[in-house]
Structure formats: structure tokens, C-alpha cells
Length: 386
Image (tube, rainbow, N blue to C red):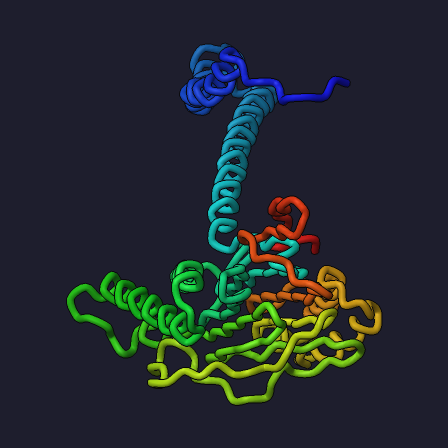
């Protein structure tokens, strides 16, 4: 096989590539015409048989059986045709919805600036890939900044609020040098979103105190992992992550969090909590409260810390993908296959050893190796190597 420069795209190849969408568009009117014409032909066949066939005019038992059989075949054909059309539309809708949901909650790359990362999310609503839980990790000049949040409620109704918070975070982490300023940007974005929702639901009366919008809130955890491994956090009502260090599993810090975003304004001074240093080989396990609140058939909560301790015993190196896979499997087994609330899990391990790697683009590690491509999304999603 010859190797060398890649073959240039010829004009004919470009024309063929451009003609494919046009051919699909040309086939769609024909497909619509067939979807309408086939039921019409089946109905016309049944009416023609009833009006013109001499057998259909007779009142004998045999003639009635034949007529019933004809109409049964026609009706079955119509039902199968409609079913195929509905299934085709459903597949197309799911494909479009999956693409839109992947844009909202993007699959994380396996490495970000020397941190090995694995994440997964499961929506409580069947048919939805994402819900009210959100997470993101971005490498910036200030360090790797991570957000994990949980919107009040679950499923499709909380997606718009999660999108507002995530969009603000993705922009603010690059602009704001201080973690507190990032949190204030998230608060302003949430306030604007809730005001617009209230205006849409109550255009004349303003924000109704008894409306669901007035009670909306988001728990948010912001982490900043600097190049020397120092970890700083701002927590607004979210569960603290667990620190996995060797065989130890313990909360990262035990400080009281701030109130969730939404019901109460942020304090005038926001001082990030110093969480210590994330040493090489140590890992952080971030989660939403849906993980700890998952119940089994007897109503018992999921023992997350015990599951993490067992996962560390099974995987002493604390490989994020293995930890995530083990905990997710135990959680689903405990909840009987489908928890009642959205669940998001994120595991990251410090793989910066003797020398740090320079900060590259999101999802890249430019320490002498090529940038890694973003992995494809699988189900449950988004995830990388679950």
C-alpha cells in the first residue's frame, strides 16, 4: 500500500458529496407521496371490491367470510403501513434529539491537561439522554476548572436551566481570573433565564411567587485544580466530592456549603475553600445527590462511600473509567435498573508526575504527543469509556 500525501479531493468527488443531500431531499417528496398514496390505494381497493365484485353483493355465509377476509387484509395493511411510518419518524426524532442533547452536555475527553477523566450521566426520564444534572471540565490559563450542578426537578423540564448555567460557565472560565467571579456570572445567567421564563409564563402579572419558576434553584460545585495540584472550591448547596487517595475514601472537605443559586443572593465576598493538594495518583469523585438518594425496593439509600471503598479495593490504581463503571453498575443494581432521579458522576485522577504538561485546548494533551480526539458518545450518555 502506497503511503505519502493524502489523495486530493477531486472535483467529481466533491460533486458526488454535494449531490447526496440533494438526492435525499429529492427522495423525500416521493416518500411522502408514497406514504399518502399507499393508504389511498388500499382504501380504493376495498371500496372497489365492495361496489363491483358480485361476491361482495351476496348474503351467503361464504360470501360474508370472503368479504370479511378482504377487509381484514386491507385493514391490517393500513395499520402496518401507519406503524412503519410512525417508527421511521420516531427514529428520526430520536436522532435529532440525541444530537441536540450531546451539544448541551458534551462528552468529556479522556484527558484534560494531565488529568485523566471519566464521566457519565443518566436521566430519570425514559427516552432522554440528559436531564437536570450538568457537568463540564475545561483547561484554562488559571487551571482546570470544573463545574457540577443539579437543577431542581429532573428530566426534560430542567434541561433549559442546565443549558443556561453551562453556557455561562463555558464562557466565564476563560474570562474571569477569580473563581468567585465565575460563580457570580453563573448566578446572573440563572437570574436572566428565570426572569425570561417567568415573563413567558406570566406575561402580564410578572413573576408569580407561587409559580414553579419562583422556586427554581440550582446546586453548583466549582473546582479549580491548578498546575501544582492545589484545589480550590466554591460550593452552593452541592454534595462535596470524595477524595480517593490510596485505599482511603473520604470527603474532600467538610465545610458548610453556601445556599443554592436562585432563592438567595450570593454573599458580598466569595472566598474559595482551600481543599489542599491533589497529589499525583490521587483522584476526585464528583456526584449529584441522585447517586446518594437512590433507593432500593426496601427504601434504603445507596451506600455511595461503601461502594467507593470497594471500588478502590478492586482498582487500587484508581483508574477513573474502572471506578466509574464499578460504581455505576452497583448503583443501577441497587436501584433496580432505573433510579428515580437524574444521576451524574465524574471521576478525575491527577496524572501529572515529575513534570507538568503545558495547557492545551480542551481535551488535548500537548506534552510531546498529538491532541486526542473527542470520543464518540454511547448510552448512557454523555460518557467516555464507561
